Image (cartoon, rainbow, N blue to C red):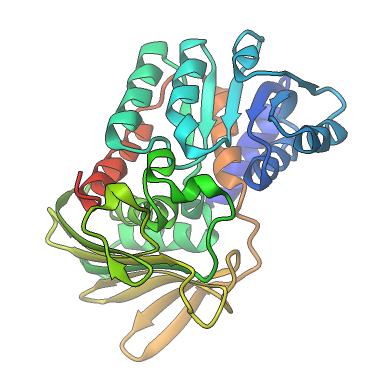
Length: 343
């Protein structure tokens, strides 16, 4: 199984010297990914950067070997194997390019960029520097989604012709920059929908998006110009070159009756497969197999998946720091989002 392979890779990496990592951005996500990477014993937090004294002190308490620097540029001058970026979205592309040009591998929070142009610029920098680039598309690494993709590749439900994607968050982001499209690149689609589009394209393999239509709303009113205001509700239809149709719905602050509604449903002529969150949880997922009116549960919680994308990047980095062409798929997602936003 994939989890066994990942654990084996991490164990082999741990037998070598721990990789020296720098961490930029130490909010909740940044700390979570730092803890996940240190838990492998294959990495050390050599240096950290965050404007917040309390955030930096929390990391220094976790890792006696870590030092704090006053500016992001100070990270770039140090002898590091990689840099983990969990700063606000407006900084992702620029900071990733700076790190790659300095010869560091990069693991970046999503979105890698606020537009396809920014994403493609980062990919170009990674190719030129020949350095590994990873993006935290974390839902790929749930056990449920891994199982679903495996069964789809085996033809378990036949050729997929319909996909339903949902991510309704009954809350909204707590940072003001999320609500400024110039800083965030978009609203709930950029925050939540990016995961859904990535899951669909990754699970379906070689399928490409040929048509995109969307309706974006803020405060219950349809947005005529999404570049002026972030959306809090979105509906979209993606048509693929395989003939499949993907429907997407995502939102912030929706009265959903629970904390979150998260689902990725795939339908073929011989049945269906679905990833669903359990009891409104943001973290607990099950994988289901549908045959007519019969439901079979394939995977159930618990599943500590949150840091696996980072751990996977670390295991691959321990094997080779070189650019991995597999990462170019993030550009397909970014181009799809650009079209969804009408830009």
